[in-house]
Length: 76
Image (cartoon, rainbow, N blue to C red; front, side, top):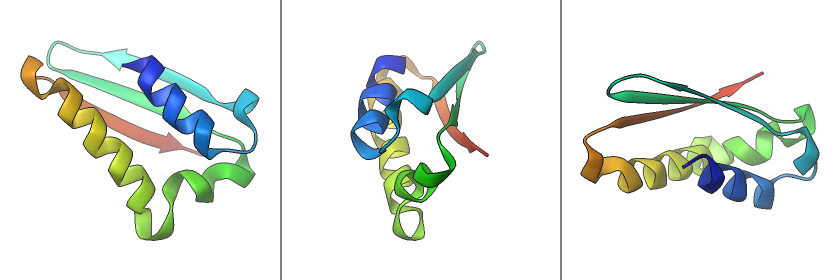
């Protein structure tokens, strides 16, 4: 799962070396905390949040069969 998020984010940003992705796993929920270079925040969010919401939708589709929740947070 983490590799999928990293692959998608790396393809979006100009500074792929500055990506930090931490995962906090619970029994039913996994939270991904994403930090990117300040110049790349707008690219990850997208216009009206469409890009980040699309990434979240893909993540939810991947884990729906496992009855888990995935939360992707973009930290500043």
